[in-house]
Image 1: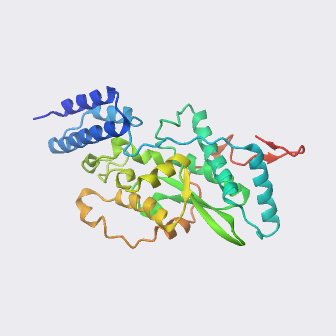
Image 2 (image 1 turned 180 degrees about the vertical axis):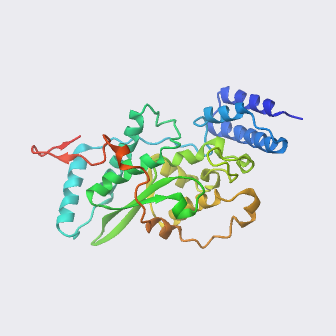
Image 3 (image 1 turned 90 degrees about the horizontal axis):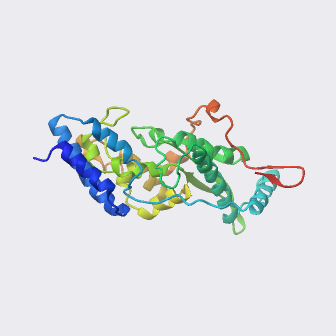
Length: 310
């Protein structure tokens, strides 16, 4: 019979091969599943497995998408900020256009990504696991400080997810022809962390989660069926919050909370209104305010020379 050590050695061999992401994920997901199932059957856990699990965190993904780094046009940002101030001062009798909304979102997401890089992280390759609370504040708070309506969400509160994850939304006044309507976006700058191969394989049903010692399920990325949706959110850090997108996002977290023993119940909550669960959050930021000291939490301010300071 194949031993646990032999499986780990094969995982190392695959890790050292020059393979594209999809092929590497396919092989490693199968190997990790074999390892976890055999480990549970034998009642043995190897320290080498946990060490390897940590090493492989950023090596392959069930859906691969690098974040797209946006170049912020300073003049257009200045114009957008001026326009939004005028909208506020005139009691929202006008709205932003898509280009203006996009530049505000891109600046806010870039604010988070630049901060992560200042910590020495390679945003292009790193899953950003464990940075969701900071990412939530860095991407949402600048928008809130402009006066925009935001929500601060956790996956536990919104979807009964078993573990910690923080994200949020922002709502803009949008000019749709001659009407001013609300346009809301979900922002999650660390969404990629849920697609790592080491946690997106069937074997996770048989392994206790390292922080809680609970046997639950693979990560949410394992349950995402719309690859275009997932790639767009990982690429941009945000996506429009429609009812369809809310379901694609929230349902994966719900399914990732169901352990193997309850797997027959996985499709019982088809009528959940994930859109409302996301949009009607009344939570505060999950990170302490004192942990944000020295970080950029506002858009550039307008100085006496009529230029925004970056």
